[in-house]
Every structure is written in structure tokens, then in C-alpha cells.
Length: 163
Figure 1: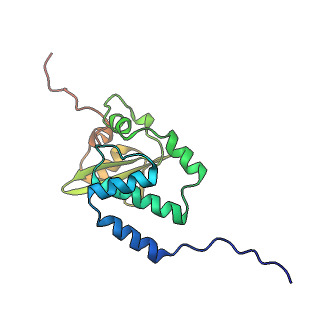
Figure 2: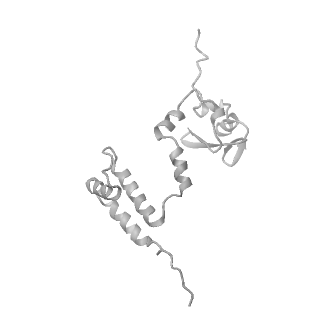
């Protein structure tokens, strides 16, 4: 009789959901204890409850369903911190040449968020491709705009100021 190899048992999704629901009901002190048990150290003192819950829920899911693959982990390790990314996003000295394909630029216009995606050859908005950011801004507003200025990539000029 041939041998049959049996793989690991499939995770029970219902028990995972129930465990995450139990986490949701814990107070901050109980979440800190769960964190200590899960990671072998106390959570950072400034970490708010909602983030402790999310990290613990992620850890439960990763343990039962599998974590990120090695390549994804390397990619995240190479990325910059949220603080550095925020500083770069509002740095007025940056030019359009630094915008990488896939970057999404956002601007609220008349109460609606407008998002333009940077492509290798132009910009995409509402399914259409535009050759320049200014053309995309024109499509959004119906008036002529300097595209980089419209999306906050350039500081406002002081043309009207007398020297």
C-alpha cells in the first residue's frame, strides 16, 4: 500500500475570527498582557489601543494563515519610515522629475477628492491619460492651472510682490 503524505491541517477560520473578536473586547491592560505573551516584551508605552489590537490580530492571522513572504519583508524593510515619507511629501524643493510611476497625487476639489496616478508616459485621471499634470488639472477643474502647483508640488509664487 502506498504511503500518503498528509499536510498540515487547514486553519479553522471560525476559531480565528472568534479569537480576533475576543481581542476586540479586551481593554488596554489586557492587550498589554497579550502583547507581552506574544512578543516576549512589553508594547511601546505610547502605542494606542487600536494599534495594539491591529498588531495582535495580524500576528494571530500570520501564525495561522502564514506571514508575508521573504521578498515582501525585504521590500518593507527597505522602505522609509512614515515620518520620512511625510517630510518628503511636503518638501517644496522636490521637482516633478522625482515622481515615480505608480505615485498617486491627491487634491480635494469642490469637496471631492481627485486622485491622479503618475504613469511612465503621463498621468492618469478617471481612466484617461494626460501628457502633463497641467492637462490633468485642466480636466479636473475646467480652468488652466499649473499642474504641479495645483497638486501642491510647488510652493506658491510671489509674482505680485514688488521688489
